[in-house]
Amino acid sequence: DFNHAALLDPLAVPIHAINLLPHESVSSLAVIGDGMIGLTTIWAAKEKLNPEKILILSKHDYNLKIGLSLGADIAIKIDGTEHIKKEYSAWDCVFEAVGGSSTAFEDALNLVKPGGSIISLGIHPQRISVPLGILVSKQIYLLGSNGYSTSKGGRDFQEAISLMREGKLNIEP
Image 1 (cartoon, rainbow, N blue to C red):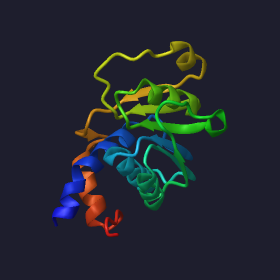
Image 2: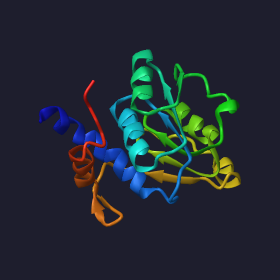
Image 3: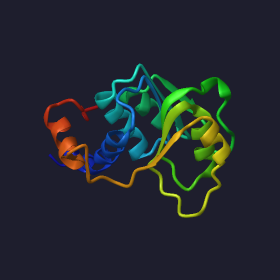
Image 4: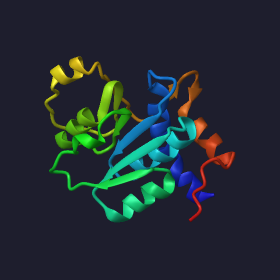
């Protein structure tokens, strides 16, 4: 139906990003951003990675609730100008799904644990400064993920269709 079809594209984007991860297992992940891509990242990660805990950082109360309903365990409202507190650091994987914000990228650097991964799904039309010292000292994997195509021998869009067809991702309210 059309409701399912409308979600295939935004669901294939995080599926592609997850398929690019260098780690086979992820016990904790954080998602920065509460738009369609951020929310579908929670959804896809819950099914594909089954992490023990998921954090969502959001600007909008309503989307925080949606993030929790999709599988996030912790929801923190931020306004985009302050940086995340260190008490929330040490996540295996951080998905940056905001774009155009150096604050979001700095938060990702603060959230990820040493040896962890940051996957940038957001589009950054302008240059942002990357503190390579932190990247090097924490030995962080930094990945960019552009849309979807093929990864791990399969088509990401087809995988999104399969997850919906199998009923693993329920979009009903």
